[in-house]
Picture 1 (spheres, rainbow, N blue to C red):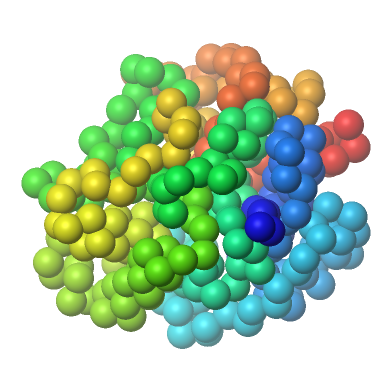
Picture 2 (cartoon, rainbow, N blue to C red):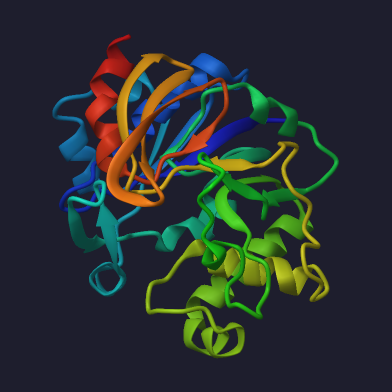
Length: 290
């Protein structure tokens, strides 16, 4: 059976997502057993990133998928580069729901470009009996910080699954799951009226969570989690100091009771979701040249 990683990477006016995917592809090849990597991007992103990086040196399969311009202009979110910089930018995440059709593999690990692979933990997914797995369990890198809005779609609603990392193998259940995700995406207003998630931003975390709820027989936490203790994340108000090795990052973590002030944290050998995209790009050259 063919196995591989799948990422989506569409640049906006500030964030070079394809460069993030290149960095993560390098980390995957450094730390994991499976080195087949597919990235879905658009032509403009590919042309921009390829000016300075030979993308094919790191990613063996590129799929060009052009953006839906209406979705692109409508789906805007706030990006932060620590508490000192805030930008409202396009967040193009529409085609993640098409992962089942786009993946060329029998077994796929769908991963965010900014979920940095610093360990071999995802090796445990391959050949698993479960046809689809993703996590609702997550922890912040600093245990004192907790955002309850990241636990549920609504204070009295369903548990939120994280579309950050999803394992699936080709089969009836996974196909039905992704068809349901696409249905929720296309009927967003209807499902938002039922599940009560806040704001106007389309997030895959929401549509994947609703699909999990529906296909899990409308039971909470019915879809099995990945064979990991949990997912770890930082906040976009954090920063990165350096990457001494290809499995180690030194972070600046914003103090929860002193916003704008930071403490140093050494993070090694554990995968991590880095929310500050600018911070990853600042260390990308060091990682790629290490």
